[in-house]
Length: 114
Image (tube, rainbow, N blue to C red):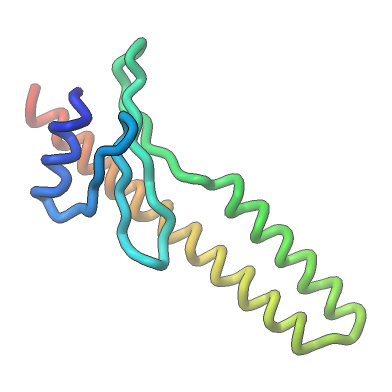
């Protein structure tokens, strides 16, 4: 599938899609990560991805800092790190939900063109 046509079709259906450097980037807003769509020329499969590992690393880091500061008796800092960890987790879940919606939309678009 041509990525230029894909980005145009996504924009027509209300997605904030931009074609840049041979990849389509879809953004939903400030609360979610941008999702990247790439075309694998060998297999012809579209890959929908986002930076999950960095998010999981941040969640783990802030969770560790929560328990470290709690054990040191700094409850205010512990609460702040806990809030950041939970916001990062919510960000990851919202991004995954939006990525699944995008995958489903692309599947329906490909099926309807065949």
